[in-house]
Image 1 (tube, rainbow, N blue to C red):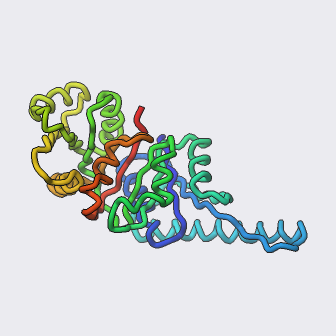
Image 2 (image 1 turned 90 degrees about the vertical axis):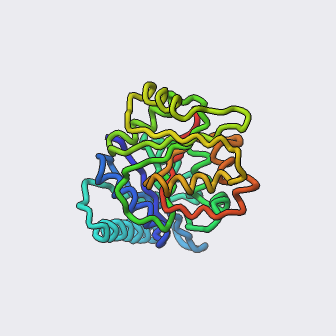
Image 3 (image 1 turned 180 degrees about the vertical axis):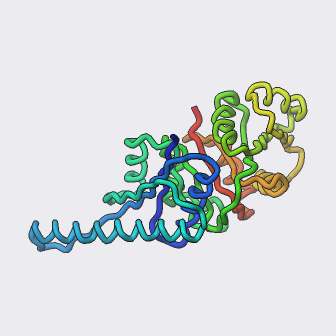
Length: 277
């Protein structure tokens, strides 16, 4: 069974990530672990015994708080709780703590909430952004305004490089959910791509008929971020999938281009980000 590490800092914004993970598990069998990274500040001058007792007390409080926090989210969603685990782990560096725990325990995904800021560019500099840029485990970034919704359609934005391997991962994720895959590719104005011919090729490669292809030939002045937002709305996509790398990539070209920073990306759908091979 695939495993999802769901992070929370107990804030209202972080509830979105938990709601999404619970929704996802109601459609497919995932093993959920809810994770909180903390660090206990110790006053100077205390004895070792006093420090030890204080740490134990605080760690127990934090563990109980996480248990109650998760239980309340389950109650609010109205979804019956399957077997899950609540883990707290101490570290000064939150992002490193999450990445290390996810890697050591072989999680398939890390699910975390964004802060819900208006411009998507401001996502960078947050814990979510650091995970996206550094984690080898795929990251699901869930907007803080996310409302639980059945995942019936997934928008997959692709540069068509390494399409066969990427598409396999997308289909493996979509198939158990019985979700449609909407493939979006931004084609150069100098290289026209026939949507119908390419759609037939994609279905042949993936052996998954529930695929729709949209080729944007970029012969207009509409920013990519607006095209994505429009297609998400048109196809009623419940989430989005992208593949990214450390260097400038499709994620940055869509969300951080000189044109797109002028626009707010107020999508309510979660974004699953895989590392490019």
